[in-house]
Length: 443
Image (cartoon, rainbow, N blue to C red; front, side, top):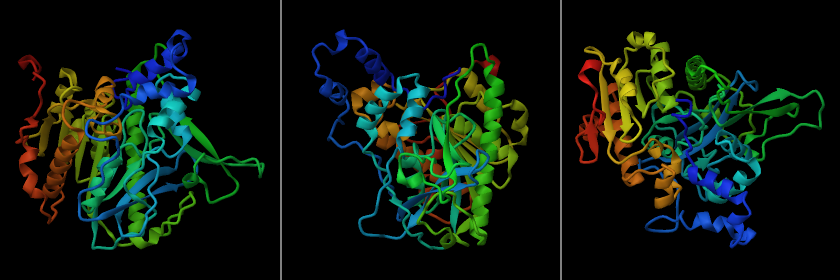
């Protein structure tokens, strides 16, 4: 179970790395062209452009980074929001800087130098379809969503979901967790020797203060013989606390309090004053982030409902289940779930509080993060980053189902109820409930 929730299963990349270490593997391939072998399998079926899809809603989308408190105990998130139109908007890099490539390499137990070249070649030019630091668009009050990433991920890897939700009129805060479950993240410490500080290899993560230097935190693997549950349970509790702190910061911004961003940033947080509908707040997450959804619902009733994507239930203590009284929507992939995990989800069933579950046919665990859009068909399937279904169709299905669920349980006056049937799995590409057969003796 140690790696069951892993975000990036780049098996082929690892094979290329291992193969490249052998002299026989490079006999017939010039050193300057070895990456071409990988690229030949990374073209899409209908064109040569692999990109993260833009939002389909009526709003243009902007994004910015917010770090409140420079220490490891502070809060770090990517904020997506409806923005005003601008000419030639700057689109941020999907992977913010090289240290995140190093984190992915460590997570996969690969050599940093070589894997950085591979990741940078494949994904270094990928952009998020949101305008960096664009001016906020005042338009009434927007509902709020806190998003929690999976094991081995970080704040930018679910941008397709977050951008779509922001385009539909939500403010979305994607938290970067500091529980050592992210492949990489960073914070700052005060530097006693001015002039020796160092900052990340990108401009968007520089601190406002000259006496701060970055400290990188990478994924912590299990130690030999270590019991996994105590670690994961401790992490999921910290993750929930981080999500709640992120929400508290949004409350401060909405109320007009001064919130200091540790990072250099051109975005004016004061323009978001009185712009959030804080009676309509949801929590959402994938895999380990799905477990974080359940923990958050138990800890804070300000979250009115939760959407849990292909949840990894292992980190949760079942004793908290009776305390979860808000509506939950489980959206599962067809290939990831197993009997024990589904049984734990079913233990949250209630005759009083709404519980919904659907399964998307032809999907895999990695059909939810952005990697599924950035790898070609046969490589994507070989690496289990793509399922049999077109990833754009899968994204459209769970986004629409999520929006319909939010309208129902956040009491929104929108037209998302046109997709109510999806909540019950009524579509050719959906399965109501689960595709996993549960023995009657286990029910």
